[in-house]
Length: 88
Image (cartoon, rainbow, N blue to C red; front, side):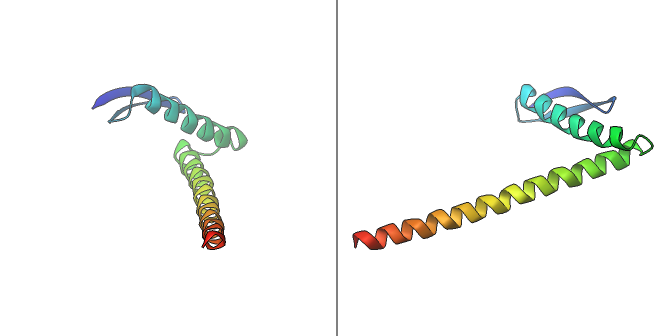
C-alpha cells in the first residue's frame, strides 16, 4: 500500500491506497479540474461547497453511465436470447 501527495484546489492531501500512485494522481487531477471549474464559475463559493457540487456532478455522470451500461447490457442479453432462439 502506497502513499501519494495530491493537490485539490490548492490544498495538499496525502492519500494512502492500493492503487498505483499515477492512478491516484490522475484521479486527483480530474477532481481538481472539476472543483476548479465550479469555483471559477462561482468565485464567491467556498471550497467546501465547490467540492460538494463537483462530487454531485461526478456522481450524476457516474449514475448516468451506469444506467446506460445497464440498458446496453439488457439489450445485448435480449438480442443474444433472440439469436439463440433462431438456432434452436
